[in-house]
Image (cartoon, rainbow, N blue to C red; front, side, top):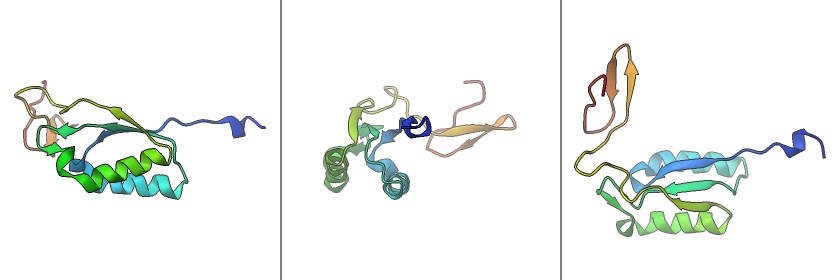
Length: 109
């Protein structure tokens, strides 16, 4: 075995929720193309209180199939939000923020 044969990579997919199903399909397609079966799925059972897993049985079934193939499932927060405050994705751009979700987060917060 050479040093190149002993390289390892830890793949952890965060915020696994039906809310991100389209994005996850692209990630899973890439992992499948690379023949990667061992990775971590950080699942949020009820993303922001709006995406309970029990309402998405096909999504859950696909997660169980991935686990059976070698993925590991971890709890990544029940709702993944602060009580009473919905969060959003934002990124700084020249002092301003590009808002992707429902709530604008002012600069400096």
